[in-house]
Image 1 (cartoon, helix red, strand yellow):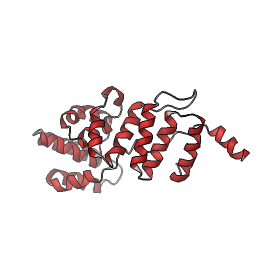
Image 2 (cartoon, helix red, strand yellow):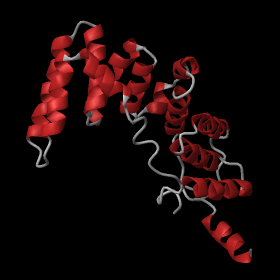
Image 3 (cartoon, one colour):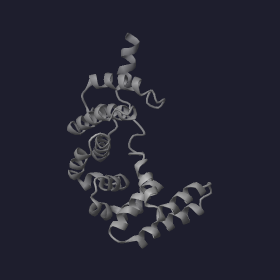
Image 4 (cartoon, helix red, strand yellow):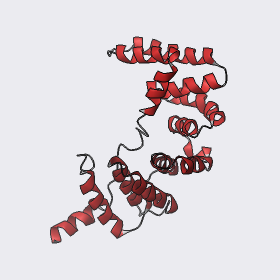
Length: 219
C-alpha cells in the first residue's frame, strides 16, 4: 500500500520488517525498488545485488520475480553512479535470463556502447515491443553506426504510420520522431532523458502481510 501511494520511505520500513522474517530475494528486490524510487541509487544497487545473491531463496506461496528482471534493475541502478562498473555488469549478462526483456536488453547494450549486441537484439525487440521515441533515438544511432540509415528511417516511418492510425492525439510524438531523423543533437537530448527501466520499477511484491499485520496489532 505504501509503495502504491508513493510513500517510499514508509515502504522501506515495511519491507525491512518483512526481511526480518526471512532474508529472501523478494524482500531485497522490494527494498531496491524503493531506494531507486528515492533516487538513492547506490543503496538500491546493493539491495538488487543481494537479491541476485539470494535468488531462489523464497518461502512457499510467495510470488516470484525473474532473475533477468533483477539483473536489469541492478544494472540500471549502477548506471546512475558508476558507468565503468555498469559496463562490467552488462558484460556478464546471460541472454537466456533476459528472454522477454528485449527492450531493456537493447538499452543495456546501447548504454554500454556494445552496438554489436545491440543490433543483434533489434529484430526481437521490434517483434515483441512497442518502441517509444527515446529508444527509437538509440535505434537510430545504432543503425547509423553500421551505415544503415535507410533502415533507421524506415523504422521511424513505420512508427509514424502506426501513430497516425491511433485514436489518440499523437501529433507531439510524431513531431519528435520526425526530428530524430535530421537532428543528432536532439537525439542525444532525448536519450539523456530516457526513463530508465520504466517497466521494471513499477511495482513491489507484498510478502509476510499477515505476519506484519499481526505484529502491528500486537504492538
